[in-house]
Length: 391
Image (tube, rainbow, N blue to C red):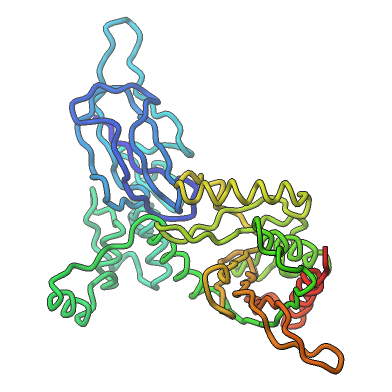
């Protein structure tokens, strides 16, 4: 009997939601046939069968949230009638696939002598990471897993995290409804925003761009977003400090020449942020095609993990819905995000008279640990200068 555990899919999240199983208990399966679809880091990933044999047990049902390192499926090997040995080794999904006897330490899996493992506290990676963040000593946590292995639920229980507040429980009982667990993109958004809140020294500066010279057609065909992307790419040349990653542990920043822009997309399933790569090198036509494709993929839930990771700068064009100014949240390791509010006519002084001009309100949030106010203002001024050009 071999147990396959949920591997680290490289999405930056410590868990995945089971979307659908493609195998059933009692079914004879072979390596690499479709096994299960999971959603993690806002993307749906299909995992193949890692072992040939007969499915003995599925450890989770559709809708369940499974932490990295937790058991997914058990397969009993079937010996082939030929003289060759049956194939029981795991096919690689991401990294090395652990067997049921192996312990997961930190972010990878390998066998460790029992004495050394016991000295450190035996825990799955997500439980170890959460305990460190909460300031809990693993030695004080009772493990409910095999051989006393500490699971995510063990750490949550020790910290009393996840218990429904009395007021919410009382209201739910009064309204005769049950709280709805956040799923998929909404769950990922909650985790990402919590992390960002805890890590970022957030500051925001606001101003307006007078775009009257655009005429009445500037916002058609994605025009507003395309102009914003061009302006941000050009602003990065003038003030590169905002197109960077910040490493808080090393207190170091990485200034980047390429601009991979994460563009917030509102979907019925929640907020998604697909990434447009190397926007500084793309023509308007190429940018438009990339933007249309990524928005369509977001609404069709067809984005991959690669589509969502490693942005160097962020844009939220929330003004297409409503709102003038905002305080967009920076997501580490990036250090800045530009928010564009609803374009409207404003009273503007032109020479000796007052005129009604089309204006775009802008809100630039930045990580004040590594970006100065002067750098943020210079970046915003450069964005405005480009937006106020006719072409």
